[in-house]
Length: 142
Image (cartoon, rainbow, N blue to C red):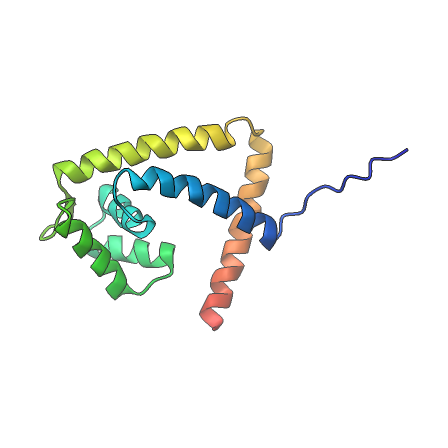
């Protein structure tokens, strides 16, 4: 007798289900910081040492938003006391929150991906990179 259980396919549904499960966990982690996901992406870009233009470019590319929205995110973070708006640099409180988020994400990443074989993670990463490139091309064509 053969095994009739089908091997799951990587498709939009499986990616979407995984995305929403991870996003639900992420959003609960972010709730403690009072940041939205978009704000956390902007904070991380600044934490990585990018100047305002570089941070805005990363945020727009990552979140698929326009540049004015990216600058609004920086302004929101400055208003919350997390960025020095004039220099687009982390304040002490911004650095503290970013460290906490980095630690939380590192732990989550280990819990979610830690037991997967490296070869499987590499294959999944390549597949997702191809899907992302194709989606970006589709977005550019719209």
